[in-house]
Image (tube, rainbow, N blue to C red):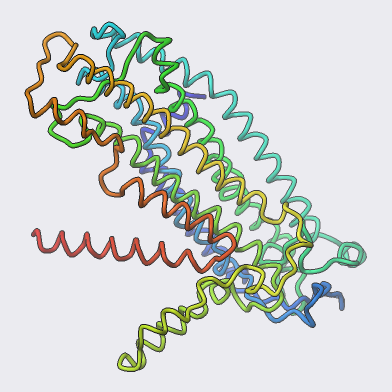
Length: 456
């Protein structure tokens, strides 16, 4: 299994492009079978209807098409291909990072001698292979959950007879913990002319490529990254008779730890894209159960859209006070008109679990690397000069050791990344806060473009 993943990692870009093409083909298929844009008002075929949640008078027409579902269209076309590609790049970079550490004499024995390269790589491969059964078990379990969810939530409704549909709809309200009424069951909506079998086959393909293969792969991948943190932990390095040392001769403020950027950069980008998938899942699950919101973008970005329109139409009338009135701290309960005390955790548990796994694994890997790096820093500080044979530090290089920056990423600081994580978690209750992160990355992207243009 590990060899299979390594072969896939060697073709990370090709796999990412293939997934992007699949996402595009799914969108085109949705267009041809009329589920790209679908409206649902609670009415089903045969004069049946879905119950109105407590506290509401009716279900307003809602856009529940494939294109308007960020956990399907955006995930399948953008987030998932990018996340899978970056996760494979991170996996393929691990051995190159180890080899760079050995070459730069940063990974040495406890007696500060150069270790056997093949033995160290073999130790990593052994740990990597040890985690593969866990990763495989997680992927298979999640695949089974997705298949069960598809059968009960999609196929059961779409292929039900008239009597069967009546039985399923009896007593069901919009905020049911298991059932969601969107494009995947559009064939049972009143006013649609979609063939049930076509609907269920298309939904099956979407579930297969996006939910089953894609999301399950990412979930399992994060379990695999525990192996990376474990390998570089102080305990494991001590068991291998190794120590991780800074390299002040690198010419970088990170004192050699910049070699980890080849792994950490795609690792963090995988985490960011996966967090976006988790947030999209969460917001869509909430939106589908909110009776008064016309579409998810209005629910999350409504006032911001109004402000942009006002700015474009009458720039002279725009005031800074308009930003204050965006309602960024309106919570999910207020946005949806929903009594969340009556919603079981299952409604958004999978999205929150995925987000927590991302945060936990990131923290685990970073913490163990940091602890090992600081231990190596202390070892160098005690010696005053390099204890490694043939390496002598200048006075300036020795001074760099005390000011070492262990954080290996250059394009985003640790504090900024932690702030983004905090905002994402807070957006589970105040979803409009996510616009702050969007604005931040847009500004940073524009800044990079401008610097690039000026540099040329």
